[in-house]
Length: 537
Image (cartoon, rainbow, N blue to C red; front, side, top):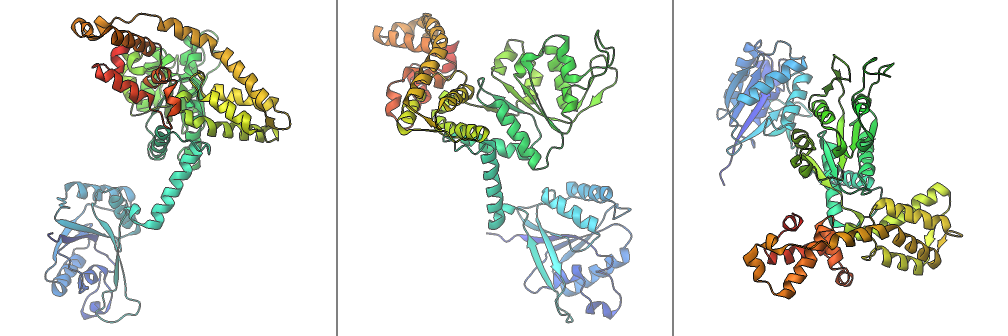
């Protein structure tokens, strides 16, 4: 493998690198000393200066040529009137970096930060950290005991912190703690959900772009949004408030006023000005739940506010400013809402950068048990009494909770209400069989209308000729045709591929340790050249 040439980029030191006469060799001069190391070969030295130190530059160039003839020194004049002005220094270095012909495949770059003003050193560090300088930081030091001709020491600093084991471990621990925080310490077992929370944590601490949380009612969108705010608040990434509104509660003229505020006299009853929720969320986080319920006019105003951080209050002529981060929640398929003309395509594109679909409780049934434990701990902390199941009652409740009978239509809201009812009825803090049997009966009654509606919907016949084409449908045996019709009816009465799979494989899935109902159904449909979207349409 060909060895790369070593290139140093650094400022001439107006004090440290100076000196005249033979006495200058008795002093430690960082730029010159760097080329005096016997075991280090500097192929090229890009010597930066701000245009007022030509004499020093000429002397340093000549001295480097004397001690290291193989080093080619290239003086680079930068336009910096004041080397203590951050804007001037950073701007000059930025222009230099953009114009410089970096060749990292053939050259290795060392960014010397020992010389120059403190502002210069800081800017060199920032430019390297941001990869405008594709190299490593170089720091040099004088010898501990001065002896004529000694070059001192040098140290290379790699800003890829993942290469430093102890630092990497600390970052890893912090990341793991943040993920646990987002899940409120619940030891969730669903691999898809855990992977999603891992990514959301990384996005939350690195980005201020909008986040879109999709999923059914009660899946935990509002809860997760608040935890994200608390995480960013703990990291000092937000200074403002957490502001939450369910857009389904906004109607008519009041919707614009609630979100964007209004001026005095904007409409009948506007006797005083109103700031609005967007301004209340300045420097904080705004959670718009059920964003799909917003009217088209409010959507247009929101798009401008998200993109430009500016908007007009209702009735106002002067724009106001609010720098907030947006998290949106919805249980609707916004792509379909766009196709139907009920949601603006440009707003959907703007908030669709980081989109996560929170699965419902039936899609992560393995997480029911740890969530029950969490809810019991919360109940105990609130009421000052620890509540537990006895073993038989716990087994009985879990069998029902993970069976095909358990609809969990309200998702975690249903589960929370169920646990609260049982804990409230528990004598001496013990949930027994009788309490569980009563709760199971109550849940069956609660979900009975849903089952009836599903049965009615499932009775709709499936047109296999339209679905497969007349020729393909004619090739099916009556047995296969009847089976496919039944599968299609269940699919059309279900919210998702996983939901349909759970219904269709309700018995056999109980014998599997990790059932994958969605995959089984997908493969069945694929054998007939069908997809989930095909049977839905």
